[in-house]
Image (cartoon, rainbow, N blue to C red; front, side):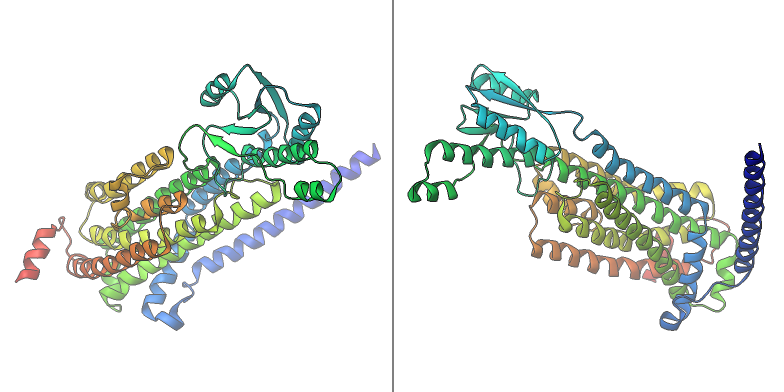
Length: 437
């Protein structure tokens, strides 16, 4: 009884201490909120830095940013952890055509054990039946008369899935076993054993993207789509709200329109990069901690290309959305302008997902990889498929940068002429006709 009382007292003391600490932190947080924004970029960018710092703090303190980040991290964690939990529960089904000797059978089982998985041997009456089971997915691969392994599709060298590793290990192991069976202990036979080669792996269908790479590429496309639409919507709504609330008029009294727009775009860009960096670092650390092979087959090129095109895609679209926001005065006008601007993003996203699933890009898709509105989705897919060389990647990025500069110049003109026009929606043709004069 005394122990229970002591435990209650200790719990009460801990609760009171935690409550006091929470109140102090809350008071500090309120005090910091009341202070003016810290000029994070002011020493380098001046007025642009002040506007960017204000935008960064406003976005990162918002509930949408915090909740969205938590949801994205939860989705990434689920995509990494769930396959690890299921790994090993479902054995790899291996078809066996002909007789598999006891040493070879033990070698196959030992290879599976080294990869922390299990194998179930399925007897096949002939090679035709094994081919049918391969195409239907009933077996993962087949051992044909101890001479070769048969798989449905070629296994890429970057494929780090359990099945791919097991195929390589079994091919090498059975090759060594065949060398043991045909060689003795003489020097010539020992040399033959030392140079044993894995069995040839025959494929029934043409090659395509590996499952691991396809999964990582799909996740990257989803994150690209979510983040581009989210942050571009922030830019659109932020400019419109500043215009309707007359905040822009106050800011423009001391800051030039070009600097104000550039600071807003830069501030949201910093938020984009911070969230993207956090997600990538979290995924890499979690995959390493739980022993996941989800990211192993992707390689650094796919991850880097996705991040690069997130930057280039945001840089291209943010100016368009900012200009559209300066032409709006109501919520319904924002939605009307957001729809046509988001159509290229949606089109690029859908066709990129389709190409990842098929594994064979069309001529149209190759062209889309060089068009700035769709390149953020098309080019990373070509990288994952191994269809883009370094100079093609650089050429597409250069085209996107040049077009972004042109779009930024046009958006700055639209913003400067439309941001102070209150009362009704400003139409683009009015601005164009004014420019022509």
